[in-house]
Length: 359
Image 1 (cartoon, helix red, strand yellow):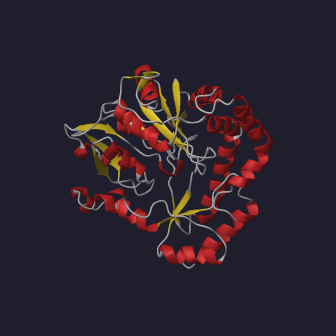
Image 2: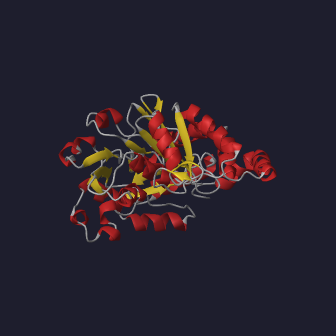
Image 3: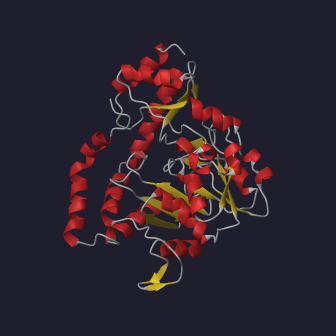
């Protein structure tokens, strides 16, 4: 059994993917080839956003909006204390300061009720994370009248009040890392926006701040997505709606079987989730993982420590802060196998093992 079975997915579309890659190899436009524009158009249509800009990674997709907003030294950006490191890392890279906010203990998403007391005259944006495949409450976040940069690295395909993740705020960034709900065959990401000016800024920033070749009006980066990854993504997008439905049906089976045994993630009534991970909480996590390993069932931890406790922040004041819900989640969460290609037999095996474990 695999935690995420990427090979099973590949086998279902192998001929089409190889044909797409061959087309790129034949025309030789490996950077900014026609596949990039075509994929951007289809992704924008899927999300319901005016603009999609393909990028080299999901990290670029949340970093470049900070630059487009002119955020830098002396500025602050509010981020959840429980997420992957890139969420706060990009704020530091921009020269600004991350201000950490605790999470809701049921959804693991940023707790909007705790944000107001964190806002100062230095606060320039909020970067909520759509963790594990579910969007935060954007209506609550908009009340602060600050730009919102959605870190949707795990939530592409999810909905909030029937609108797609990444199309819900000024900026929506996502990752196409291979293990994501929609994954490339390497690093890739995308930024979505409905604002023409922001879209232009992101397009220039990803090309070394270039308005046109050898004419640079901004300090940017090399953040381009290559043509082969765009070709792969466009092909995989064709089967993505079915994969989202399959993830949701598998999650429903997990929920019904495990709800009385372990703590599962709450999905808000106004949301649909794409379950980038299916995450539960257990005590004695390492003992539980050993128990599962003995039964040849893989597990993973997303994530083992709050962001403000990362060693890189040891000299910062916020390193000493304790966030009750983030601290608890980081010591207890564990993710079970989840993939559209997880067989009924394997899922039953996972469920049986969890139910038989003496929690």
